[in-house]
Image 1: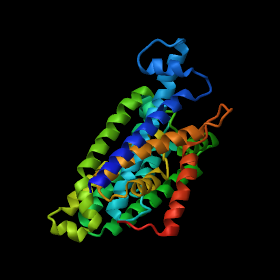
Image 2: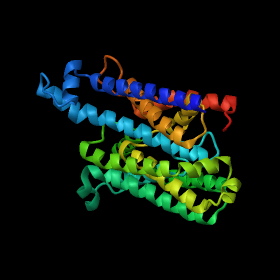
Image 3: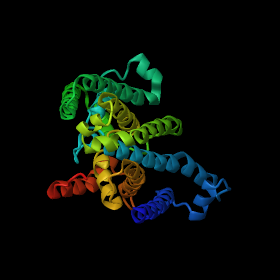
Image 4: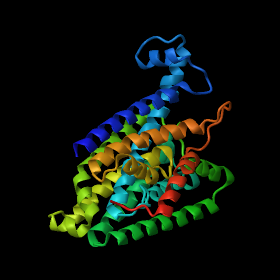
Length: 340
């Protein structure tokens, strides 16, 4: 046991070092070449050789890499929770229909009521608020269902049905929208890390922190549910309130990322499996820590890949996470990855 614990501590330290290196690398790379010494000087509060460098790093690159880190943590942790509670290796953070609810909110703004006075007054926050409301409505429906339904697989199916129904509504809105509206919505669905402002980070970061804290509070519950709901009940666990706690934490994490960055796929499915393989553990506390770090690494690497060398263009982050995550998911299906 001590040997395994020491191994996990060393692995965590190595992963943290990799995360820090990638974080600084992401700040260093870009269309404008900034000396490495200036990057370090800016991060440590010193005076760089150019104020322009300082503006680029603090106002553009730093918020983007922080967003990548936060999104990676949120999606990975929420994905781990969903895979555990549903005992399904292909479950992800959006399995409850949270992403679809957020998409409906965005669709109503971009394809329907974008010119409404309230929407105009909210400005850059309009899409974020709309996505949160959409995700919140679906969360409410899921929680109401969880109070009445005992079978967890039934909740999973109903979550998928909610998502499908909302996608149908969004398709109808797309059908009646004009070309410019449709393009704006399609661009949003591709995901973006660079559109989050500093003021929005002040909301995104606390939201993810709250969701992550709820995840760690739920760790003991998930350890019991991992064995089975029958065992959890005999241990005195209130299954209904356990589901509410887990679903709420997951919705805060996945809903916040979707609201600010758009729907980013495959991170929440692939990273928990990478974590299990590396840590060789079934303990939720260990897996939550590992998923948080590896999720941050995964997203920062995706952000680095999204910037084509020698070009001033950025590929959609959703495409990169899919290309990185799909091979892992395929491997899981082929090998019929089995839960411990």
